[in-house]
Image (tube, rainbow, N blue to C red):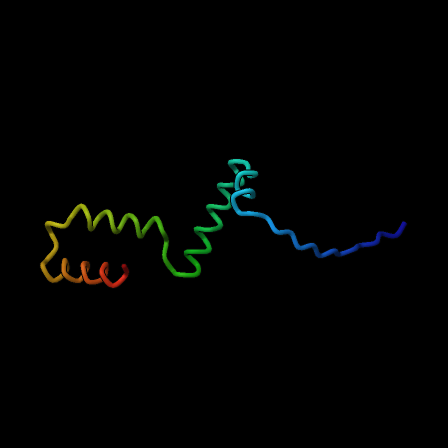
Length: 80
């Protein structure tokens, strides 16, 4: 018997909150992993590495030179 394949395109408008509420925990983990990978590949930044770096700076502020401290402040002011 011959098989027949049919492609049907359907547009569905789903609210993000509704979608996420309908996900199981393992599916939410997959979404989070996908977002992390997409962010990393798009911006070249690993979020976890960035957070670790910022925490290290935060915990070592006494070791910063005045110039380094001013640079961090100017960077923060530029981003806000």
